[in-house]
Image 1: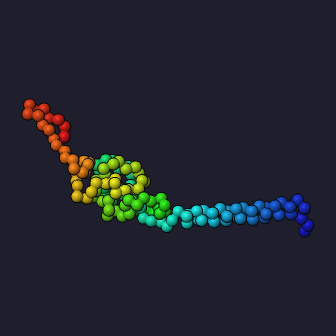
Image 2: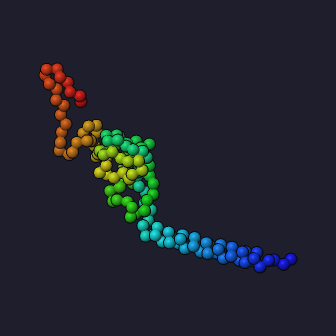
Image 3: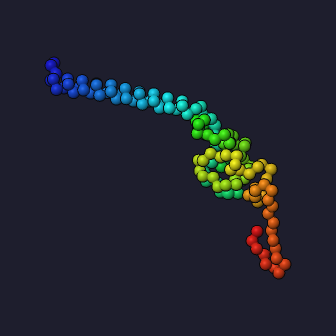
Length: 135
């Protein structure tokens, strides 16, 4: 059975196009892998699962550990849940943002004291005439 020259040319063109596409994909993947290696090794990073309000005490459900490249991670980023669970957020945290040491109060401070700067003290003032301001 004899094929038409047009069919042979179209098949040849399809094969050449497939080979060019395969080469383009292979070079793009190689470039992506090279760039990824330049970002550094993967490291565990603690991130907020959801938006965390100011003053919230973190639980295991509030944070998760993900892997990020070393060049994308600050030195003060927490790496495990144990570093954050039970500590109070002193700034609001955005969902999926890395949790830094500076975002959380020291573990020895609880309640309203976590929101005060070191060396400061909170005082509740109650007037003698019965006026009771909110706490």
